[in-house]
Length: 79
Image (cartoon, rainbow, N blue to C red):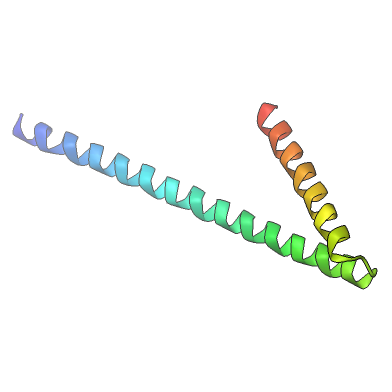
């Protein structure tokens, strides 16, 4: 009986640790995705700059890109 009472809390502890690790991994993945998005945005800005667009044009295009990305993510979550 005593062994059972000590094993159960440890298994609960392990499960909580695993869940915390999964959450940390999810956060790392979200950060990697944010970094990839920032890199894509920088690349698009470089392309637009090479094409001679003004800063205002690039700001508008950046907002369009963000809106499009948000729409895609939103639609992905619904499905």
